[in-house]
Image (tube, rainbow, N blue to C red; front, side):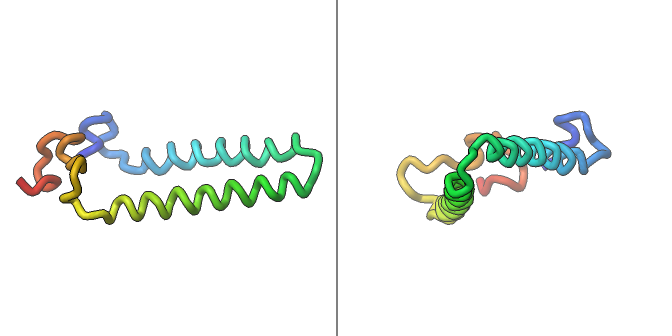
Length: 91
């Protein structure tokens, strides 16, 4: 897919890496900074473990859902979201 033509960053493919890096650093700073507000170290440790487990479950669930068979009832094809993009849909 040619995201550069759609976004105006035709010769700058690293724009996606830069923006995701900035967002991840801001989110990390807010989450880690939020632990400062929890005075009980054990409670902060438990919350940290809950966040890690939730991230693992989210990643595992996304992987399982991605690998489900495409002929399930109610399954949306990628073409529904992206239109008829050459090379994306087996038409």
